[in-house]
Length: 381
Image 1 (cartoon, helix red, strand yellow):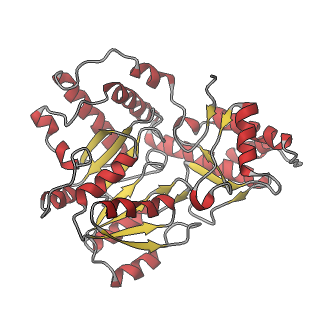
Image 2 (image 1 turned 180 degrees about the vertical axis):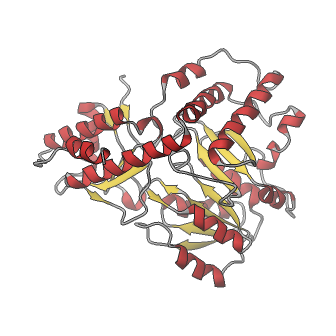
Image 3 (image 1 turned 90 degrees about the horizontal axis):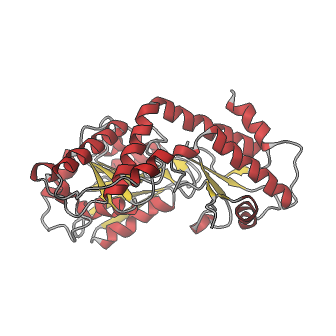
């Protein structure tokens, strides 16, 4: 089977040097003391990307493991937890909170916009008895980007711990964990890091550790217990056998980012995203969001007369390009293009936009403009 040209909001394309790293001969990660140094150094490199001196850990499991681990480690029965919801994944945190006995309070907001900071502050003035709050940096199904730089300090002002799902934003968007007072930041290898799926990235603040260590009841379970990682390096003991080949790949993917330079990476994502949105809008697509656009994913409604699933199918079957629809309340309503990590490069996005124009023509949609020409016009601005 020929692998498609993947342009979904994760997993993303993976550079060859990352794939080759995963093919390297590996050691026994539990017994080889050199691997503890390698793992620690890899975590520190990721920490420099996240802007944190706090502990960073790489967990064996896709990004959802991080979301559940944060809730499992912080939540005790009857704890009040604030769920900041302006998207499917934002709302989804309530399931993990409930699973571990917490009481979720949902703060709902317009799902076509970023969280309004002034409205959130008005809510918090009268409602701030929460152990921690969850917020999604980029809610992937809609592409909405929330201003965690302002949200997290506001929550901490009221003594609320902050848990941020940055899986779809990390690397593609700026994040400064320490400066922005993020207690637990969560990422995944398969998004803008551009490594294969299978690893969670988590940073853990001292305030978060203090909360976990002062629990009245033990953390339920083992695999989702973040405290088991606290002294792994000093003890030379991993909680479980590490997926060493995956970590080799993530290390090289991280070095690719650092070699390019973080500011250049962010700028590349921003320019690609902006030009993609403008070009599609010029060609007859409607942007789903009213504001709060992410640099890692574009979400659009197709031109009039074009069905989402038919366009996705045409691109996959005739042009071997894989883009995504969405799910939940957005199922069969929008198209999602993931321009994150390796995907956020001119040669790649140009290929996809050209295939989209051809597929639209196949389906009977014509326009006197060209998506590629419009993209090239805006990318030069």
